[in-house]
Image 1: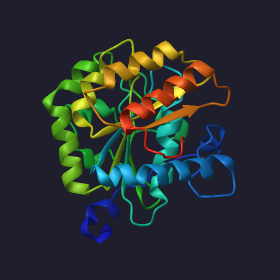
Image 2 (image 1 turned 90 degrees about the vertical axis):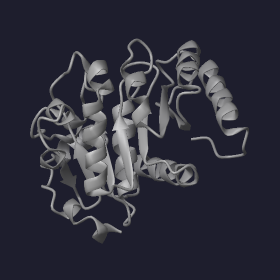
Image 3 (image 1 turned 30 degrees about the vertical axis):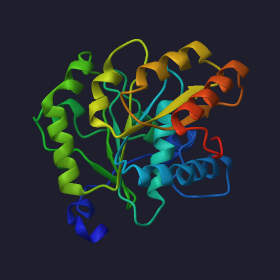
Length: 254
């Protein structure tokens, strides 16, 4: 399958900083530590749903800012890319507050808005990390991000990327659900989302409000509870979401 997209292997390499990645708890190689084990498990648990529903474009979001969306999106992309047959794109679509470039210690070649408005080709912006992970990074804030995400030019740029590089999975680091319409503006470009809930920050009401906004608009692929301290009310809400979206199927909770 990799041989079907020679453009992929011709991408320029990403100049990342391993020390910076470690500070942000990003690990490319599978090793005997708790983080890689958890994300490899999440990857495997999600695999059936992704295959069953033909999910190619996967968003990662949270009810509010600071819930760890970028951490989850980056480590999930790294875990997915550890599969030899994969070809994963990780894109920073939190245009108002981009963070992935900082976490990888990398400098984006240009503002991502240049690509999304059609001013620059996506092939010149994508950077290859290892063999199986390509990144669309950004470091320049876009205040009118919701409007840009709704523009046909954005959908066209991502469609061109898909046709040229044939990724097996696209992962989008997205803005939070609540507060602004950025996330809702991008939902038509997605096949499903992962909802991240922070056990130390998010209230049960916030998680419920996020669920209400997503219901009927997209497919919920997984709910990830981030950080260790768990408020009982939040955990109960997550269990309720799981039962409603997955019909009470007996699957291990992540």
